[in-house]
Image 1 (cartoon, each protein chain N blue to C red):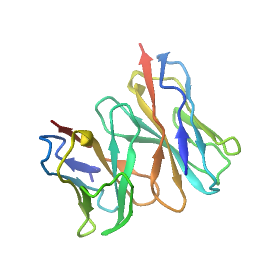
Image 2: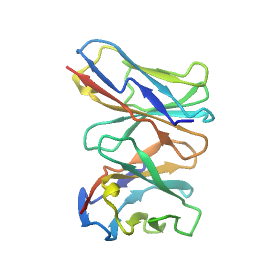
Image 3: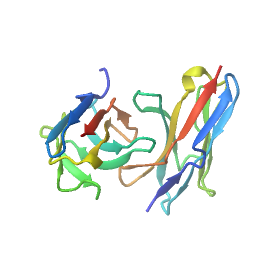
Amino acid sequence: AQTVTQSQPEMSVQEAETVTLSCTYDTSENNYYLFWYKQPPSRQMILVIRQEAYKQQNATENRFSVNFQKAAKSFSLKISDSQLGDTAMYFCAFMKDSNYQLIWGAGTKLIIKP
Amino acid sequence: DTGVSQDPRHKITKRGQNVTFRCDPISEHNRLYWYRQTLGQGPEFLTYFQNEAQLEKSRLLSDRFSAERPKGSFSTLEIQRTEQGDSAMYLCASSGDYEQYFGPGTRLTVT
């Protein structure tokens, strides 16, 4: 069975700093997808970024980028120039290519301080 | 299109009562998912539909839980004989490919 581990329950950084959130996963699959979702307080889950396992190039979306290390089964999220609106729970999630079920980590609470 | 919607947003019910939640997906999406999220945890998969067919159900989905998507559009999730342990946020998502987009959730409190 697949598992996703987020080892940082909570992180706090100053506005404009760069922060990296960690995620590791365990799978025997070769084809899969990885995602980072953001859940602001009392608001809905928002897709931040995705990575296809067959792509070697790391995904980037504006201030958000990932460091995907397939052999190490690691998928970290870097947020550059952090903003107050980035304060949220961040969840790492895994999906096998053969089904559409998301397997989630426990989340990292990120606080951006002014 | 305004995204995935869920109704109601909040539901308080007494133990033993039945409740039903509705999810309206993004219109062009053929897949619809239900997840349950308890406080401070990541979501847990419950079930998903491709069009009107329910293709997968989690072991978490006990006999008291049933989901339908009768015409391949909106879906309902019913919980019969609610228990206090059912208190959670119930999330619905939809997708056209592998990216899932979530609704705001229905928060259920069982007293």
